[in-house]
Length: 241
Image (cartoon, rainbow, N blue to C red; front, side, top):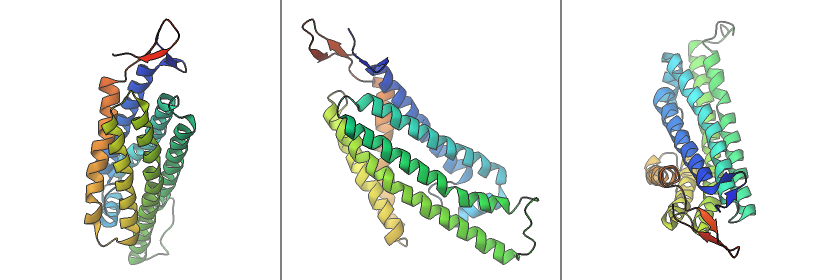
């Protein structure tokens, strides 16, 4: 008999988690490519908002969708890994949710920039240089909020990596990669706040994160996990898919 995780078999939960994780990554890529929301600099984002509002709006939709997908991913991973260590699984879910909330709040200043082109908003009292300065200030505020969210996204990777290591049904190399990814995101967070003039410090973090998180998503979706089967004597054993 296959042991279930809640209402679903563990392999089903694993594939849902992998699919949601990959959808989240795709939505992030779309947000960055369409609206330059994410890793772009303030000037590029400001130019996109003012020069290509339609693309920016699509990028914003993708960014908000990625936030929802990330919370759903964390919920699926919590469901999958809860039998390994429930308090630790709950911690990763909470850290993820807080990070998503901070990141979504960081988008609010961008809406203020977008409102400058709204005919219903009277900005005639401000000169063009003042409007440009206000827009850049709003974009810079967004970037600080976006980077602040990375502190929580760094933290959630540590319980996730540890749970993967201890699970027994996922490759241990993925657990080590996720722990390394947690360190890498923390380095990125510190670089932006403490050494903004040296962005090259954080370049390896992006590569590590892409490999670790894409690798986990692909493994869960394509390979799934070994299902647990209950032996006749009542013991739970790991089977093979």
